[in-house]
Image 1 (cartoon, rainbow, N blue to C red):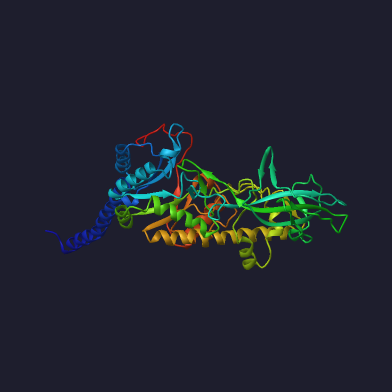
Image 2: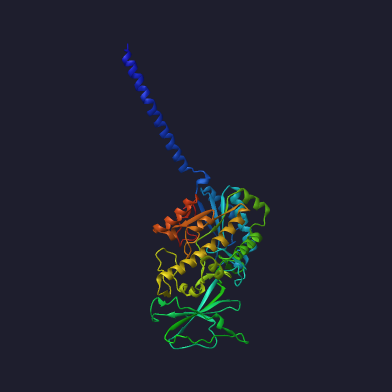
Length: 459
């Protein structure tokens, strides 16, 4: 017979084992749930895939089968993008053609019927927001500052017709008949011509715009003799005209829109209403589904100019910063591309007062960042929300724009490994901004070049 002490001891041992056993069971259940979620995630937790479509060169059966294969392969959604093929006619099958509209809508319908997300690029291919048939000289198209430079040596003067074309190496770019004069300025040069960068005196700049004469034959002339005969000068002629930045494939030449004026967004809206949002049944699916407009890396270009511009850029700068930016536009000439974080930050010209140079450039890029948000990202987002579409963008990296503030102006900011690489500060700025805004941070990950059409999804 068990004594009372032994019975009590056994009961106590059992009582002690019960919580341990319960904890082990809970641990096993937790581990099993983690494994289940990892091996069989819900569709909301899966990755999305990009389909770079060979223009509209697909049968309906191919489109349905490919979208189904993506779904069966475990992808949550698909991003659709037009890519050019040498053997396919852009006119008949490119972005903006009737056949492209058909293929795009079929792909969207198929994906949305499966409960997948759908992302559409903001133009043909991915590089820019662009519109087929857009007038490249209009305010809705990307506008740039085209700079023409003359050197006036000490003791010299200039007279006669002003130069009306810019030379870049062996190429010549004429000033277009539709171009608008921004201003003409004489800048004192304090270094030799071989200095890199050439140093200038920002306190002695002289505006010569009002000294221009428009002759009866259309020629523009300028006669000017410097008061200080001992100084040498750089004369800068600044013109605003279309960047003429093209994107392909498209049924008509697709030109980049103006990112700093709402006329650009109006042009984009007009295209979407005519080619994408003109199907009521599809629009209803968009409202009920998860559809995004995706803006990839900001690959807008000043082409042969030196800065981005719009009709009222100078006025907006003056109102926001309190001084005229036009005399200092030459500081943007020759600035290198800023794709990577450690790019050299000097162009062709410098100021003797380096603090002043830094302030002027920072002010310009700040104003452009504000306009990019106020006139491009925010009105686009507000308009798309009416149709149930959200915006996802790799915002401003690759350009001389502030990198974190535009996160406030999109629904989903996106990073890209191609650019970030091991740039810790870039990750900090991008992820930090997204967290402060409590927004999901997307990442373009796992891409590799040079393997188009060499592998299938199952590989």
